[in-house]
Image (cartoon, rainbow, N blue to C red; front, side, top):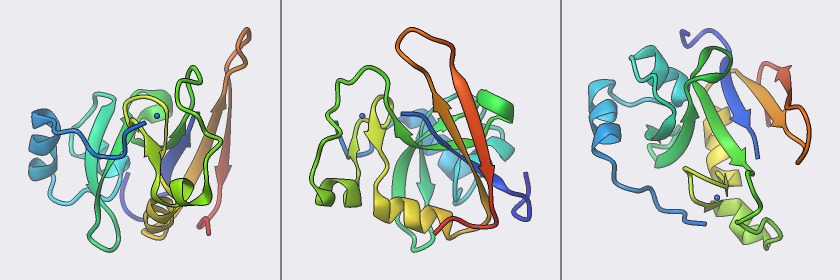
Length: 146
């Protein structure tokens, strides 16, 4: 995808806010310059889902989970709930800065989501799975999310 195309952001439904060191991720970031999101990483050849480092609008570097498999790949995951191991009943300050483990259950953080979604046009993809049922997904396309 080019910067003029809409770029996906995935929400799905983790407890550590720091970005874990990952030699593969560091190499990917150096190789592709300053990726703004998972779509940039995907375009540069990173095709394995996992935690990567991106650089947001104000030069903030943040770890994000990239889904490189679903619906063409390059999805930046902003929320992920899997099994309820991370409590989401939290104060506003936690939602502002983000919480959880990026490779598991997490919320990326309102501040990070704001910086991410102000970089260019995005699509929001919501994937919902009931405990005993078929997974469903929905995609919302807009010029921007604010």
